[in-house]
Length: 224
Image (cartoon, rainbow, N blue to C red; front, top):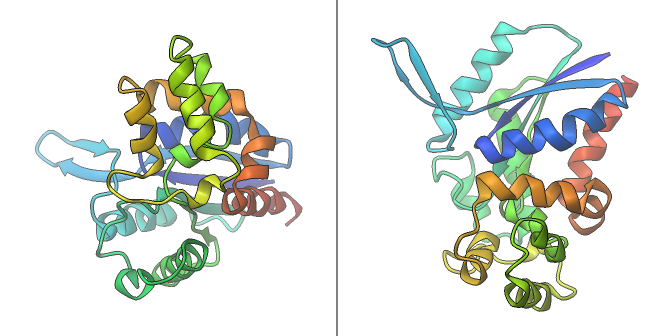
C-alpha cells in the first residue's frame, strides 16, 4: 500500500483530487489525500492560510515541511500546480520560457524535483491551467450553464480538434479567459470540478497527454 500526499495550488485543484483522483487511485492501492499550498501564516492567531501559488520558496518550504512530518518510505508526494502564471522565482523559470509547452513543463518539473531532492517527490505541473481539462470536452459545460447553449457551441468550435493542453497561456487567451469571455459568470471553484467530473477521467486522459502521464505514474505506485 502506498500513501500519496498531494499539494494543490488552490481549492479547485484540491477538490478535483478529492472527487476524481482519490477514488480512482484507491483502485490501484494508492491512498491519497490533498491540501492546498500554504500562502501565509498568522503566528499571533496561530492560523494558516492556504490556496494560491504566490512564491516558489513558500511552496517549497510547505512541501518540505509535510515531507518531514511523514518520513515513511511507503509515502509519496506530488503537486497539482498550473503552468499559467507560475511564479517567476520557480527554478529554471527564465531558461525554460523559450521552450515549447511539453519541453518546458518537463524541464520545470525536473528542476522542481532537484530542488526537493527526495525520491518520494513526483512533481506535476498542469499545462497550462486547470481549465485545459474543461476544454477536453466543452459540451459538458452545460451541466452547470445549460442556458448558455450558444456560448458552449462557440467553445466547442474554438477547441475543434486542438489539443486542449496546447491552447495558449496568454493573459487574454488562456483557457480560463476563453471560457470567461463566452460565459462571464463561469466560476472555477463552484463549476470547474463538476464539469470535469462529467467529462470523466477517460476523456481527460485521452485529450490531455501530460495529465495522462501523471495519472499513469500515480497508478503505477501501487505496484511498488
